[in-house]
Amino acid sequence: MKRGRKEAPPAGRVCSGAIRAQLTGSDTAHVLDVTVRGHAPILKLCCVLVARGHDPATPLEAYRAKILSLRIASVGTAARLTINSKGTGFAPSRAVRTAPPARVQRPPSSQGPATPKTHPKGPAHTNGEIIATRRATHARAETERKQRLAGDKAS
Image (cartoon, rainbow, N blue to C red; front, top):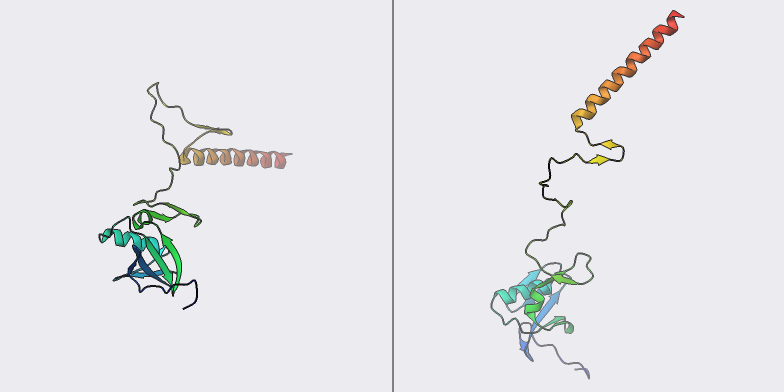
């Protein structure tokens, strides 16, 4: 054994009050009779350990081969965390992640009928109104074109 390095205890063994976990690959962690896979296997492992009745205040040491890679102060605290959406840190885990609302809904006003929203280029219309307006404009333009052609032929 090299000076300054102590030999890692076997997986699952509690040494100095800490649970020893083994990391394999980039997405697998193993301790006692539990093996988990995921993008954050140690956090997932902490959730499983707390769910199985381990003391949430127990620390956890994760080893990759014989090298200590990660030390968790409390499995209970780690069980309540998840990787944040940017992948740069941790965030409290939630059962369901939701996106912010697309538009804030205001309660209806009791001061009379609601006025239609207006756009800088004019009032808002329904699709049917827009199509009818386009057809009428197109028909007027076609009539004017025919009148011009008839006037040109007469001259």
